[in-house]
Image 1 (cartoon, rainbow, N blue to C red):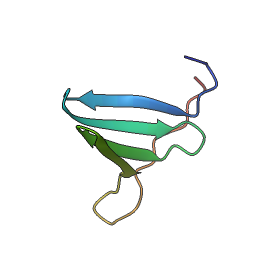
Image 2: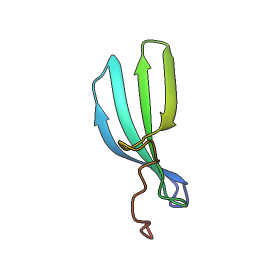
Image 3: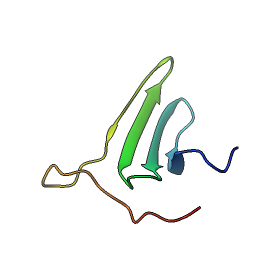
Image 4: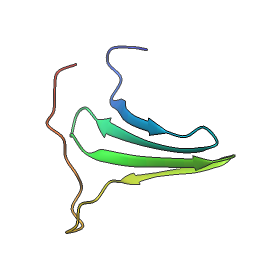
Length: 60
């Protein structure tokens, strides 16, 4: 993988039904990705108040 990729996978679970959490290394926003078979989707991960979860930005 290239060192300058914008997104980093920080969590992964499953093989057929996959759930992953990705972090945008520029903004720190966390995204949830879920795939089942040939279908999948990604959306921002939200907290209880409906605001996006933001991780500290680290220079990787």
